View 1 (tube, helix red, strand yellow):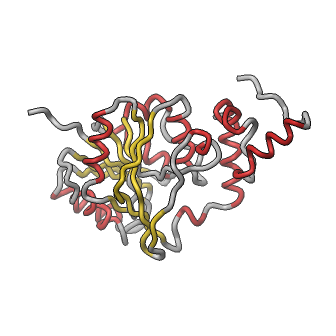
View 2 (cartoon, one colour):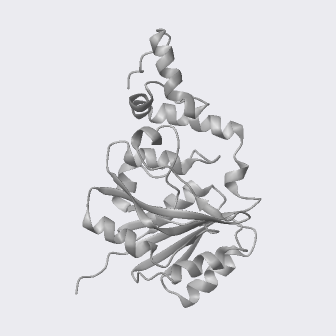
View 3 (tube, rainbow, N blue to C red):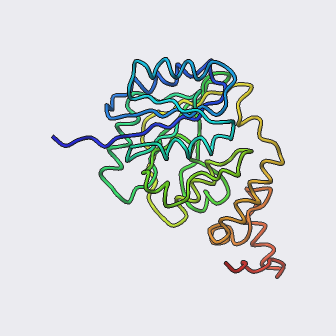
Length: 264
């Protein structure tokens, strides 16, 4: 009987004692049996480590590591370096997955080596209950906005090839930049026809705390690191008003006011 490929679910955790148990239970309820869960505690000051370690005592597929507070990108990269799985599924410590998400994602990746990323439909819960309506994936759209949430499955080898999560991006949006890094040279993206991911909405969420300065830093960072990809799809740089990037660039180009794409 052929052995199932191992999936490593990697979970950065910072002060999530209120939600971590629920997240772990959603992983343990998965119908896919070949799973390990690597929790990297990012300097929590609450009972997160104690909760994670309690689960690890009775579930050998769960491992908890600790580090000084360094941000989720550092924690994710560390967890993936420690991972033994062929496939990686990030899952933040306050979110949930459905029982069948892992199995269905693995099935797609196993059938088609050209697929780099598998995700699904998602639902928001907590302070807001609604389906998370995300645009369909396309490279031109990825150049100006993210439509793939962090909890999508991919191969560990592709994480290695693209250099992992940008650890400088401590302000947020590191998942968007990661997908650009992984997909800018091609590869298929598949969205499963199931609601397999549940994104918790709460007042203190990191997503809500991103400032205008953080958004501006993201634009500058992506323009610098991925300028060839950005210029290819937006005909110029990503703008602070991201939606208007391509129209602005085309207009400036007709006036001869758009600088040429910088050399590598």
